[in-house]
Image (cartoon, rainbow, N blue to C red; front, side, top):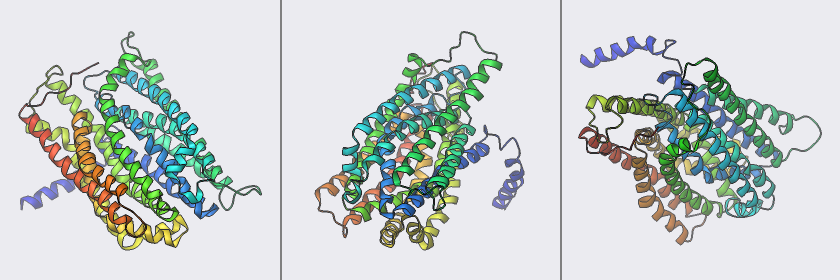
Amino acid sequence: MKILNSITRRIRRLPSAFSSSALHRTDYTGSLLFNLASFILPALYGTLSKLWVANIDSSMVVLTDAYTYMNTASEAVNEGLPRAAWVIIGDKASRSLGKRLQLTHTLIAFQSVIGLILSIVFHAAASSFAKNFVPEEVRDASLTYVRIASFTVFSGALETAVATATRALDKPDIPLAISTVKFAVNIILDFLLISKFHVGSFTPTVNMQGTIQLVCNLVAAFAGLIYFLWSNTWSFKRHASHDPQEKLRPSFDALKVLLRPGLIFFTESAVRNALYLWLVSTIVALGAVYATAWGVFNTIRWGLIMVPVQALEATALQFIGHNWGDWRRRVDISTRKPQASLKDLRGIVRPAFRSLVIALVFEVPIAIFLTLFGAKPFASYISGSEEVAEVTAYMWRSLDWCYIFYAMSTQLATILLATRPRWYLYQSLASNLLYVLPWAIACQVDDLNDSNAWWYYKFVFGGSLVFSFGAILVVDSLWAWTLYHGKTELEEFRE
């Protein structure tokens, strides 16, 4: 009877959950809707881009993954300082809006400079990059594409900085604007220049697709930056009543505040992505079929399927950052060893568990559907090769259930990411050094070929997801226990 009454009460609350206030971007539901829209558009284009290339030359589909691997190589930069935004810029209880805007400007300026430097480095090292991440069959034709794609690292660094910081500022409409501009311009230019119905009598090329993608990424990133400055910075200067001494320009002091947690996130991402790229280089070495299948598999798992997980993660991080800052303010930010009640802990972690439940509702049916019906036809459609589709479907059947664990661990990890960066680093190092590294070494030592390689890789990639879930459960439990008993020393608050 109690269960029935509880369900009835929740049903009665549904209308209020979809009220205008609940759908506002400062509310969980409203922010989630913005994030879903902003993540689904790039994922949709990522799928369409492979279709465009498959129509041009199906053997070149694997070349589009050079763009992905290049951005993965630079991901440590995009996950360093930007992730510090959840802890620092997301703390609206202890920092004024002016201070948070200055931190945002500093983050964007720093990331833009670093992204430009990385792009120049990748451009200069195009031959070495192609040797490791492009199959031998298409390597000679890849250098121009790799050089074009190198400058997407700059646009990606700028876009990530703007998107992450503005989400922490409760402005998820800005990342949505970036995604909308990128998607719309990409589709228009692709349709006009490289589709089967393109204008003119020229023959579309893969390099043309790469150029279009670069131009659209740059246009979208700068459009998002201008929209942010217009709707937030300039609006703040015009209308807000604030201390005239409050500076909004990027500063070295603001950079130092971001660097402390940012370096922790950078280290975590550098270790994780270095191991991943090491493993990917061995997959690419197996030849074009395997490399293309892995790229298509990534399009499936990181494309439309993972959109709910990514959107839920961003939403949970936004509100856990707010809740953590609010709790630290209430217990006094100068207190280094505060004690949290059960009510405090529930309040801090509620967004993570809310995201966890929704993630399961989305991901379980999707995984089952793809395993039974969708993986092979989808892979065949975007690769243009039945052989690639067979390998991709086998990959998916081996790992489908593991991504349920990934969906759960991603949401649970937001608790550490938005509150205790150092603890987030510890759980990641545990997974990568204790599990992934030994398997990565085994993949290098053993003689892998088409017939036995996936036996190793399914344990590396699938097993790491399960291991990470267990590690996060343990570390989250320790996080709660130490806070409840007042046994953890928190980081010093810095303006």
